[in-house]
Image 1 (cartoon, rainbow, N blue to C red):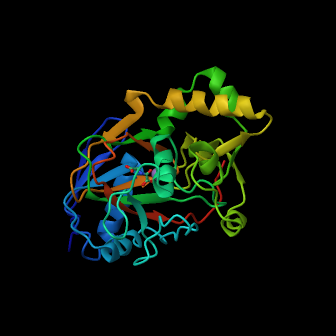
Image 2: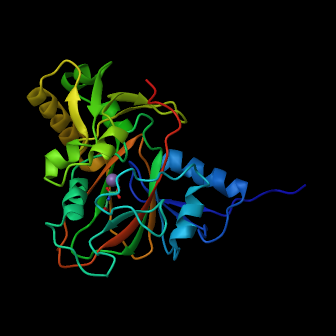
Length: 294
Ligand code: OGA
Ligand code: MN
């Protein structure tokens, strides 16, 4: 009898979420048993850290395809989508000519929104499953990416907040970004491609079946039954409650780390860094295949 021994090693990095994975080479296709083992670890730890992955963009996209279809970012006006590999979203402060961009550059303003708690592509009718971020040139002065386990946040919500989210929906609008950070508005075509959507504030995970809080503070521009100020206050109160150390893994980057996170049950935010320091990261985003479950 042949016994298949899955070669991966899983080392938790924080009690709430985040685990390091050893024994995966993203440059090679994975066998089915390894894909399953990675998926299982992902559902358990929510954020996976794969150190030492010297991958090309093509290999990054190839690895992503084991877990779903890579998203192609709908906005082209700010050049956050790679021209070379269209599935790559550029989290970078360097332009095509390798020049450092000022914080006032439109793309940098828009990227600065990721310092606030959010989950990627929540403004889509079927929001993203997960994202994979490759640290190519990493920051040593900040640029720490922080993640929160939103299952635990939901479980621990005080009654005053729980009452306000149960059975309620929030709106997610891509156009909220420019109102928030003063980046250029999306073009009319980009706006037409991404009309605002309503999602439940408490969602059930399609794989684990567990419930989590689902808010995305950079996209949430309205909450059912509340005026604008009350909606903003609720999203801020929820984000503040979530951002406690017992729910948070803070990732300090090393070159060629690849992080893979679940957008359905986590939020993330990056800390500021010295804008004179280069920071180049490439992201893929896995397309959602179903509406948000309640
Ligand atoms: C992202 C993001 C985090 C970072 O890529 O989705 O929010 O560390 N960036 O820059
Ligand atoms: Mn993000």
